[in-house]
Image 1 (tube, one colour):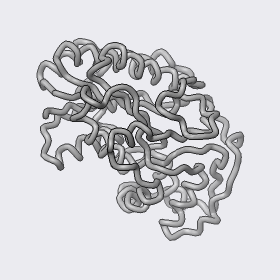
Image 2 (cartoon, rainbow, N blue to C red):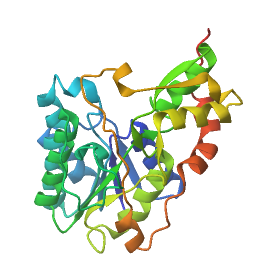
Image 3 (cartoon, rainbow, N blue to C red):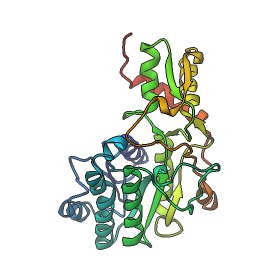
Length: 293
């Protein structure tokens, strides 16, 4: 099976392509410089040249706050790009596994969001990602799947976990939001799920699925867990409300996703976020530049 990973220079794309290489799967990994998914000619040329059986789209505009002032550009990447990929996949007989986000929901639930919950994005980023979901599923309904995830961190790119590692080394105390709840998710665990799902896309895997680590936490909980694992006093992390950090894009108060589809497909249950963090943190720490006080 030939794979093509877009957005392969980013956090999730690098993990996904790396895992496929480790498994000795034929994979073409294209970063933004190698493939602009908003360029229809480039997209068709890439699929014609590499003839993948499956495209995993990890390319995205992820600057949540910037999207509030530049929704048109975000929509080109998050909405038009997936549509072009889906059309090219249809033309070249490929399948498509597209990565989306918890931001498609309003973030005001009190129980984990199932896959069929009605979307209601409250940010430009969420609206553009929802447009991408709908484009993929309408253009390629029988040969595509959308995987929503949340709160990603990993070795290769910026994340909250890497920020906490740096701040632990440079500040006596850190104020962290304690009124937003979600699922910290290690990008390597998500990559493993994508690789398991890939060969089944278009068969018993279509539509929308959720894939995160299990359990739930606030940002404050996650920060304390990082400090504790670093051997630092978690009491140095101080809880504050989200109002203390006003942002152009409102953050969801509740972003926990249910995993019903994964369970029904017989895939391994996602492991708890604490177990994933325990394994991930040494590698993340090693690759995180340290700040001096």
